[in-house]
Image (cartoon, rainbow, N blue to C red; front, side, top):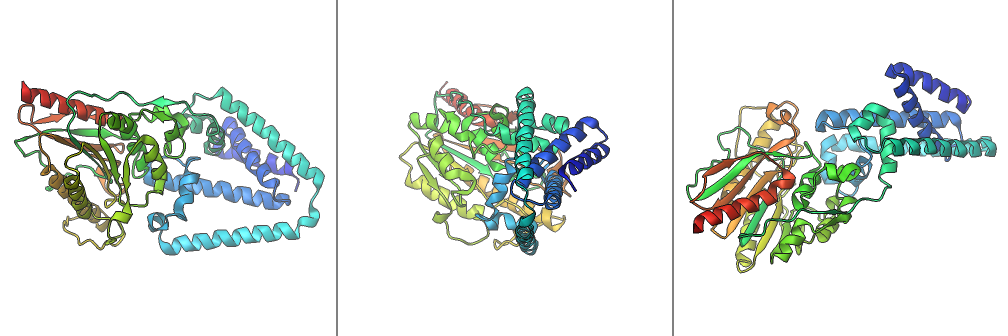
Length: 465
């Protein structure tokens, strides 16, 4: 079977399946790109065809599963995130199950070995003329795709999928990710009447869970600001919310680098909020009880300006993820030890991370009348709320607590998880009696730090007025 016949057949099939000549053409173009790329290394047209079809099918399967769980499509940047499964297996394998993971891994290795073997035994059929023709064909397709990238540079990811289909969109983003990123400068922070101690907790998958234990704004000596928080992710991709909070840069400003700002975009940020706080005299420390290399955090936090990164090596291993109670004890000890310093502390919790089907060593405290997955999450949410209450007790007139959820939990059979998927909750607490007791306002995560500092400043002015 010649390559020409294969391509014509795929074009007809793609047009029929998509019920659109335009999408049929673009899907055929994506197939030709993959087919010709594989053809540079695999010399049998039939083997190239099989590999190309399997690869496209796998991408469709991953895309479908990801959209079902995380409400977004498969992206080029996911290739880099999924590669971390072998660096941090305990973080990813539970999502698919250990047995299923090893079956998949073994299948991939066996399939790869079979392809290499078949390619070797069919080496006698190698035709240098066909090989060079394939390279020229691949170059021609790349010229066409590059032209599409230039013409449609303003299209968003979702618009690209609508226009070109998912497979070609992934290839387009391969090109886009080669472009040089624009330098971005964080907005200037409010500088008047700043507190001596700023404690920020990014609580894993935290929301107000509509339970009796939800945080109560009950301390008459404290001022609260709270509301819904717009975040750029659902169920995963913590680094998007994290990056937005620490820089004040919106997801849209990052353009194609917004999927994973911790891979490339962070290098182009100047005057981050952390660098500004350091200039105000703060000692900036980040506490995250997990591997500091995960999500490239070690390099990112160094670039953003943190003085110190406290990772999992500072904590005794007592559960799959460090419990919030253990983390709370460490925070209190650290603050007591550095009570004479101006401190900005950024805490990234991990206890509330899914999957919620994992067995936990930390005894369950809260039980609700739900399925087991929801019960596990609510127990973790209850413990996070206890952490919030405990840290509130540490506050004085020279301190402020900022608490927010990075994203909602992905629990398919729970309405509270599925509605308003890109909204969590935030709470700001200051020790003051002369301003509104509980101010309600919905904001975006990139505005949270600046908003919090202004609230503290206004509260301070009310105290001295």
